[in-house]
Length: 431
Image (cartoon, rainbow, N blue to C red):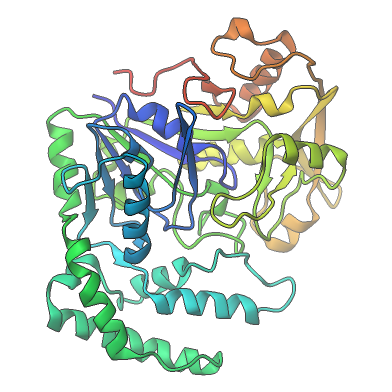
């Protein structure tokens, strides 16, 4: 059976939630492999809206196992609140349908406080634009070997030792930022109180996934954010704190890379970005405003308005390479309906030199000027199209040109937030 990794191939917000939900019908297991509850996935199923941050998108589908892998940093209080919210919408969540990796690192209240304090203290032009939810500091503690992990909740002595080690690092930093000292006993009490509810879902995820794989079950690996926010291959330092590219699916769940059969990159038919950082094709005119209004471009987590621009084929070709994408899912094609002319970025001008990739240095990224190719738009509606025959000829030409420029075929085409408004070209789960 095929196992599929889904990654965002731009700056996030590409519509991964809908596509993962659509694919989950074919999967037996859905596993989150990185990020935290700074990710926002909106699903629309039979007219009902589900908004997820920490839970895997497949959790709303009955009969599936949802997994939170070790590559995720987990806010346990937020997770339980999200579980409660989803249950109120009629979704059953039990230890049989949800598992959390025992070796996943926890996001503590002190991480969010530090995250927000740093952002507030940053001078203009140096703010990262984080969600302030503590994801970055939690990953720092993980790498610094001072995390409290899920398994630590099971033993009081271990838990207190882990907290003490973390505080040795955090208290001096907090003093420098003008924050009050940490209430050590209060934090320990909070963790002990929540421990039973989290441990109910704890499991050796690496073992479970490998057993499922050997049994021939289909596994769908779900990433958060987008590849251009990858800590190594994104627009550093305006990135997230984890690896987002497809290779992280293996290390973030404990399954070997040879078990991955298909990588699906989710790509919006134009480009958006939330927060700070370079954005070569960003529009500050009526076209950019129109894209934002038609695409309802507001962040699921923060509510912040997304920056909008024309499709950047250079960036998507680059992320398809770094993630080994086998096919893309092109989303929000319907947002382009009614534009007389469309533009696609096919290269950059950097100080008179033409580039076919985004350079690594931040100062060079800021000086990249997009080189555009223009294509005719279409006046007909593509919203809700479920076959190629439903698409106008100009829309099909646009899709085909995107395929050529990014050097990767379209596997799925999404024409509305509704899960069934999807054109299947290549089934990623096909054996």
